[in-house]
Image (tube, rainbow, N blue to C red; front, side, top):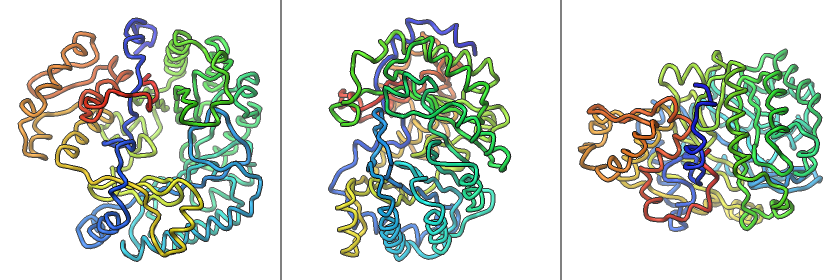
Length: 462
């Protein structure tokens, strides 16, 4: 697929906000009526059911601390240079694990682990070793699983990467965003390109299975010309995976973004040029467009999973691992157990206070309805496989697809005329062109969006 053949009018037509669908329903639909008791019930149902034996767990651990504030950031983080706060946080993480295991059962099998933040590498090597030892005491990690950690290149050395490898991590994700010094200065994140190149080279020497690089387009002081220079450098860097995100400027929701001057942001037309350039440069460099905002080398497990129809999606994005129950640990983290979602409280004070009371720090969540489960199946099939087969959904959920989704199928005719998908008697099939707009296709099946047209909470879909 040559990005240059995409009609600019089509890019403008879908320059709209929408969910990333790391879950359905999306996290903004969670309610406070779902609390600790509901979460405990879900844990016990997993423990007593077949899932615990048949399906491994995924773990997410949120480390909220950062030494320095990046102005674009919309993550839940705490800016501090007091590294002793990490030791205290680990003590409370262990309490949270103990409470989960008391209801979930000891020694559950884990095939995925992701450390996110914040900056997980805010923790010292000794603290990361302590964290991993604690997790291994409580869970059984399988060989060959996906064990990943987010890296701030400014906080690691080759020796630190070696320590991460020794701890069992086999995947790294480097936050790069942009290589241009003027852009880095505008977002308060200065990191020389040479530093990133050296760390990626060290990662390869150390034998990590996959290295991901995050990029953002639409940042202050970016132009199509400067961003193309960054893309050329990334093509030379040649990470296994690239995540390319559109910057969503929502200063009313995220205070750090108030330090970004709106007049410094590139106009919408320039953002579309940057996106088109990214598609052109990266695919010319041999990357496969996996979907939405992810590119991977043909030999990477993510690209292989897409070719074989084994792609999955969870709160960390695209994955080669089957969609499984996710135990989320740490402040603000989001998990899934059975047909439920839950999110922890967002402040350290609340998190510590509830754990001091011997309570799990669940703030809100959701128990999925039958309709939610049907729509989740459809949306995840679109996002991962690019197709929905009517018969498979009908057999799994005992519905007549064409009758159940009559309104949605009618709405898809326009997208078919635009060349984004085809529909036949067997199902809906996203075209090669449609992969670039797959979020827009999925949005048609989002019941909550159809009821609530306020999409200001979401990033642009392309």
